[in-house]
Amino acid sequence: MASIKLVYIGGGSSRGAGTMASLLAHGKEFEGSEVVIQDADPTHLEAVETISRKLAAAQGLDITISSTTDRRAALTDADAVLSSFRPGGFEARALDERIPLKHGVIGQETQGPGGFFMALRSIAVYQDLLRDLDDVAPGATIFNYTNPVNIVSQAVSLYSDRTIWSMCEGPITFPLTVLHAAGLDPARAEVTMAGVNHNCWSTEHLYDGEDLMPLLDAAWEARRDDPSLDVHSRRMLHLATAMRSVPSDYFQYYYFSEDVLRDLRGRPTTRAEDLLTALPGYWEHYDEQVRAEVPALDPSRSRGGIHELELAIDVMSAHFNDTGARLPVNLPNTGGFLPGFDDDVVVEAWCTVDAAGVHPLPQKPLPHSVKGLVQQLAEYQYLAAVAAWEGTRADGLRALAANPMVPTLAVAEELYDEMARAHRHYLPERLLA
Image (cartoon, rainbow, N blue to C red):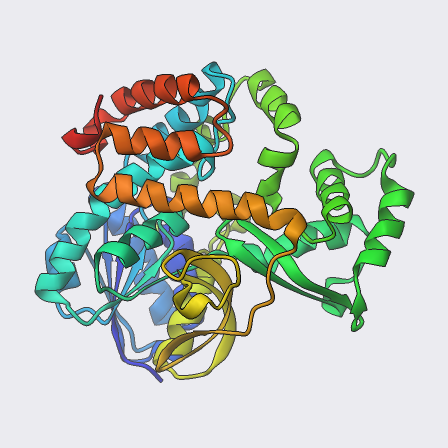
C-alpha cells in the first residue's frame, strides 16, 4: 500500500473531521503515511487533529497525524496535497449569495457572480500555495476540492506546470435525482456524464442496457402533476425529457432561472446564512468527540456528513496504489478528448486512474441541444481564470459579462464593483474598481 506524505490544506474547517474520517476509512490503503492537517485559522485545528489521531489509533492504523498553521512547513516534501479551503469563510459566501439578489441575479456558491468572486478569492490564495510548492515540494500532486474547482483548475493548468486533478461527485450523484424521480433503480442504470464541473450532461444513458429516455418520458407523463414529487426533482425530470439528456442539478439555475430567483428572493436567509447558524452545533459535536475515547461522528451533526471529499481520496488511492479505477476527474481537454471544447479548457469526464496518472476514457460529444450552454460556460470559465490570475477590473468585468446568468453589461458593472468592494480584503489590488 502507498506510503506518502499528504498535506490537507483547509483541514481546520467544519468539513475537516468528516474528511479525515473518510481518509482513515481508507487507511489500509495508506499504511505508513504521514498526514499533516493545515489551516490558516488555528481555532479548530487541535480538535480535528485529536479526533483524527483517536480514530487512527482505534483502527490500528500506521498513519502519523499532525497539524499546523504553517503552510510552507506543512508542504515540505509533500507527495500529495488535498486542497479544500474557502477564503473568507461562510461570511464571504453569504455575500456571494446575497448581493446578486439585489441586482435581480441568482446568488449561488459556484455559479454566476457568486461563483466568480469565490474563484477570484480562491485563486489569489492558490498563487501563494503554488509558490510554496515550487520551493519545498516540486513533485507534489494536487487533489483539489477548492471551489469553484473548474476555474481553480483552469487557472493552475494555464499558468503552471503543476499536476492538479479536481474532483466532484456530481457525475456520480446527479443521475440519482432523475432516476429517483422516475421511480427507477439506480443499480440498473448506466449514465455517463461530461461537460464542465457542475454543468455536465449525459452523453450515454442506459437502463438494463437499453436507452433510458423512453422510461423517463413515461415517468414524466405519469408524474408531471404528482403533488408528492418535490419541485427540484420535477424540474430535473422535465429537463431530462425535454433536452434528451440527464442534467446536472445545477442547470436549474439556467433553465428555471426565473422560478429559482423568485424562490431565493422570497427566503428570509441564504444557504450560507443557514450554515453560519448551524456551525456552532457542528463544533459542539466535534468537541464532544474530542473527549470521547473512540470518536463516533454523527452524520446528522457533522458538516456534510462523515464521508467528505471521498472522491479525492479514491483518486489519490487509485494513483498511488496503481489500481486503474474508473472515476470522474476535472482536467485539461488535452488532445480534444471531449469533442467541442478547446484542448486547454478544463473539462469533467470519466477517467481511469493509475500510477501513470489520469487517463480520460473515450468520450461521446454532448448533444447539440445542450452543448451551446456548456460551451458558453467553458468560455466564461477560461476568462474568469485569466482575470483571477493576472487580470484587472476590465478583465474581470469581461468575464462576468460573459456569464450566462448576468443579463446585461450594466448589471455586470454594478455587480462587479459592489462585490469587489465587499471582498476587497481577499482580492489583489489589480482587480479592485
